[in-house]
Length: 458
Image 1: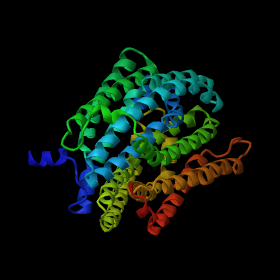
Image 2: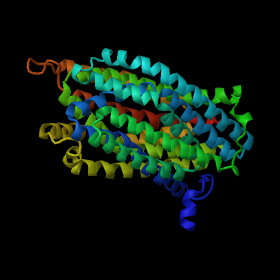
Image 3: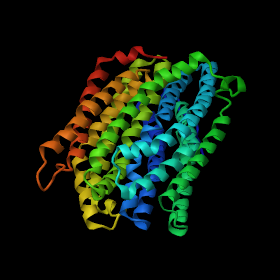
């Protein structure tokens, strides 16, 4: 019982061994991120096996547009996590309470905006991308259901971000596991039994996300020993609201730029036909799992740095950054090795088409070493964000995406055009991504060592 209580209690990262606190915080969050990745993966597996490869391509083609139009949630979540962790570390109860209340209100406003605007823009964006006629209607209906039901997605991301800022990564995990189980059951029920196709997986995702959001809210209301929840805190306060936006905007802009670049690259991907689109979907689903340790350690480092910067323990921040980054690299190396060894078996989960399995495995092999580089980028960017410097990671992401990935992708495609390959070699999509990851890691390490992030505390 004592062991279980240790995991359930919020983690104070300002005391104890840095690497142990980071790992203690990361493990449940990593499991939770893997569970969250199962949302999209189960969607793909179910439609790929029960509907067909074109349905699989449709779900994947909708991804970049979905990511572009939910950047508001990303911004609020990041800003909330940074402020909550710093105020928690500084033991400032009043500011912590006001920040949490304002985040809840901001999320409601952002959700209404996304429900209306994103629903109207979905079809024009799909047409702009040159989405094949064979899948465009499926893509559109899939996106519409997700946008109209986005309230669950929004509040789960923001409330789980607040819980993590308070050092509680275990609760978000427990609730996510419940909703993932619901999602899997509903996916199979709606698609395999009721024949609802891509609409079925979208509806299952919306219902499951709403359940996880409700559970997170209930948990947050029970933490009255840490902060206060009163109607007065729900009223937007200029100072807190602007600080959330100021801290979260760079991450939101980064996500927007990244998603726009993905849309530009998706247009190139679409030119290679439905088979390559489906292969790209499979690779990105497996990629999601390969990236999970990096994202988990990155978020853990944000909370770790935020709490210790709030407590003004800068030497402890540096020590934890080194230990956390090395652990993240080791975990990523092991996971990447497993993916390469069992690559064909993994790809075979999504489709029974041998050519598609082989193509997906080859493309995944190109990205392999990049995941270790991303461990460096995510961990050190997490430290900078936790300290309040969200601008530096933003500029690095923008530079590597716009000035590295997109030009390299189109450049290789152009230079490798032949009569047999009128659009160039399809490997350009993944080579460009690998190069951008490697350069991003080098640049991030350089700016971390410069240390200007230490002057950005809330």
